[in-house]
Length: 236
Image (cartoon, rainbow, N blue to C red):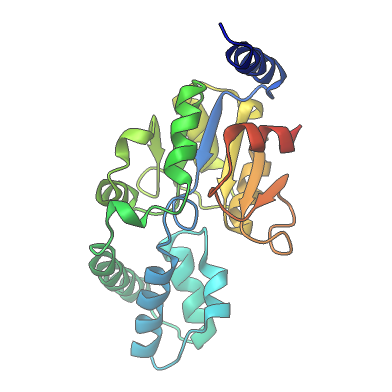
């Protein structure tokens, strides 16, 4: 055996010995696995225009990481629109149809840079992987991305009854994976999502800007060029 090969083996042993006790990683969908935020914005903006007002990109930030009905309530507040519950359900369904039409454009190439490599590395380290998203369309989107097989469990808007920042979505994911919350890392791009992770007693890694995701334990720009070893070293 060459010296280089032996060095590599020893480094692998040292890495696994020094690794934080992480047994599972839970990922948000929008803005973490794939950028569907632009489709959400277009669909919500069309709805706002239909109701007689506009929705800015800045206002759209308020809708990230929360459920469809919670998002609708915020949109209605922005426009000063008051309607009954039946009409709300109708508008939410219309928005979702617009969003799904836009999501049909998604292909496997739309996965955010580096995320598939990172997920494969987690598999190699025998770390369980779950999805925790407010979206009710997570299954459809992952199918279009050809990424369903990457996840051991999917907890989405069809299962949860409480939206982020409530910790329910991630606690359900940990339960599905049979892992205690303190051994889980959550990857989130939204403030509400990081708050949800922290409320669940998990490590919260933000995807985006440090100035926005101030409550995260660590913030990275994205997964491109990031390895599991890099990330765990930074979390030590």
